[in-house]
Length: 213
Image (cartoon, rainbow, N blue to C red):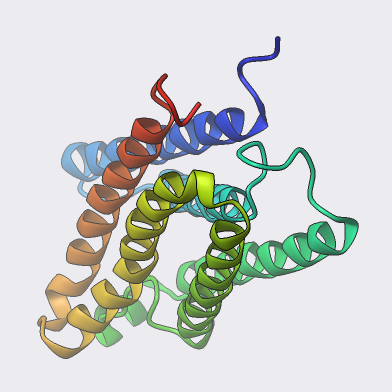
C-alpha cells in the first residue's frame, strides 16, 4: 500500500540535496561574474549539500546491499548500529574537510593552490570510502548468495556502485599526479558533479516499474 517505501524516499532526498548543491554553486559563480568575488555562504552551502547527497547515496547503496526492502523487511539491531557508526564518521570527516578548507584565507589558498580534498581529513575521507567499498562488496556478495533469485538485480547494483565508489579516489589521484595545480579544483568539482548525475540516473533506472520492483 505504501508504494513510496523508505529506499525510494532516500533516493529522492539525495537528488534534492544534489540539486540544492548545484543551485548554490550557480549562485556562487553568478556572484563571481557580477561582483568579481565569490560569496562564502553560497560556496559552503554548495559543498555541504553535495556532501549530504554523497553520504545519503552511500547509505542507500549499503542498505540495498543488505537487501533491505529488496529481500528482507528489516536489518538486525547489530547491523543498524554498525551502519550508524560508519556513516556518521564518514559525514563528520566530510564536514571537517570542508571546515579545514574554508578556514584557510584567500591568500593561503592562492599561495598553496589547494583544493577541497588536499588535507589530512580529505585523504582520511578517501581511505574511509575505500573501506566502505570493501564492506559494501562483502555485504552484497553475501546477500546475493543467500537470495539467488535476485542475482540479476544485485549484479547490476554491484557493477554501478563499484564504479561510482571508485570514481572519487581516481579523480583525486588523477588530479594530484597528472594535472597542473591550477586545474585540479575545477576538474574534480566538474567530474564529481557529472559522476553524481550518472549515479542518480543509474539508481532511478533500478526503480523503474518492472520485475525488480
